[in-house]
Image (cartoon, rainbow, N blue to C red; front, side, top):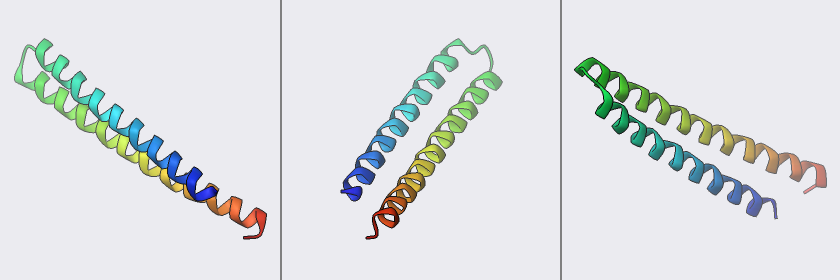
Length: 79
């Protein structure tokens, strides 16, 4: 049962990460449209990359936490 919960939580983390990455790309496009210089466009791209990296880190943290919760549940039930 815990494996199913862990898998569901991981799928949720993956979905959230994907949404955040898509949002970062959309924000970058909007910022580039509003940019007045090449430097501003480069900064928009850097912010997008930072947001995507942060989303990926959050996803990985969630997976680790989900695995730890599964392990804790197993040890508390004696399995």
